[in-house]
Image (cartoon, rainbow over all chains, first blue to last red; front, side):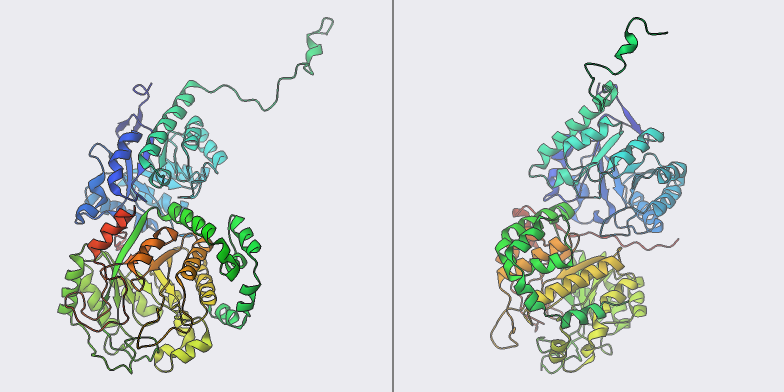
Length: 263
Length: 370
């Protein structure tokens, strides 16, 4: 199953549907081990943290060469700033993928849909593979698709809260309505929640805080890798129908099957 | 809009009585809730909440871990001038003190910058006294131009300015502003600042707001702990931080917890703050404002700084000299005595041994042309 189920995005063919991150680790030297244990092939990194002349303090030194880099625009408060960061990332050799984060509310760290769509449009035209982080709103998702996004990244709960799929119903609508891949980003706190997102039909999940701040990030990375794969396999296998009503032993319409009922 | 009305209102409230009236049960109940309002914050600062300190510490640790991870941002201060017209009674640089006065020329600024950059630090805090004629906005702009190529993030801890001057400095490449109210109690403030421009309580109180207005990304406030009842000062500081967060949601609001320690000779703190009380102050702030950055300076001892790491700290200074020109040359007079003289390399090794990642760079300057 793993080999036939390829996730194609931005010209890449991925076998893992778990995207990971680089923030919040007590020691960045854990990053390669987490990449290995989780099987993840895509990793996001905040450009603001990249320090090319920082020697061992440079987070980039810890990212294994086979990973696809997904630089993000953390720190951008407007579309203009996000665009600038994306161009800097490309100039610094981080490739053409960009996760747009435009946040001007540090209290809740919620993304600004309008500014995100503006940045997406500019960067997609410049040839970036744009993955915008957003609040799961159907109209914003459509704007992002029109603007040239390669996928849509709705939040499950506010960044870093580990509160799970609080926006489940809205994400379900995006999965149903959008032709683009839906990658659930932010808020996923446990492997079971990632599994749930995949069972719903999400194309992938991005998990950082829950792995980086676990007591054993390598073990947690492995658990998330398995959970995402399990959820994906469940989605592909077609989960059985779920009924909220028990099947009554004396059905209310049972009389219709009796002899003598007019047909 | 200004925080002034709220600050003055607080100063008229019988806060000490209200703190004393809180019971341990009430504090526990606050800790059981999901979010905490002003009243709950007050309860966590009460003497009765001391009985819940372990629970507060655990909650503060979890919140900090989720929001900031196991990381500590490192920075160091660079004192470029100690000329000062103020008469702050607690400060080594106060105008009446007969100490050698100096202002670095730009070659010396460059030499200091190089010495700091060689340690790997990328976040710099530029400091002066309050003497705009000797070290004013033009001079600061010149310093920033010299230092910018070495430091992606430069904050200022200088003298209060108007919005326009802050805008100039933001355009030159400054991204953070540190300004301490010292005390939120206007009467005590007047006693401690008998002369000099700093006497203007209201102008100083509104300074963080003017910085935020001008586009500073980080605004760091604080009260000098030991000058008066710490519970009242932390309550006012937390409410000021919350006020700034709400009005300037794009600004990273930070609080420092500078604590005066009793020491021989100079000004003595009227109301010394114990280690246990400082922990209560810090954890209450973290629980009230989960996204607040919290800065701990080298006024604290290495042992205490190491111990409080998991309780809410997000930023620390390292490799510190509080003397003008002290990074390139030793033996100068400092603004205050430091207790933690560890080098950047020593701090780095210690943080790593405690399972924390020292973050040297967490900002990339963005000049938006379009």
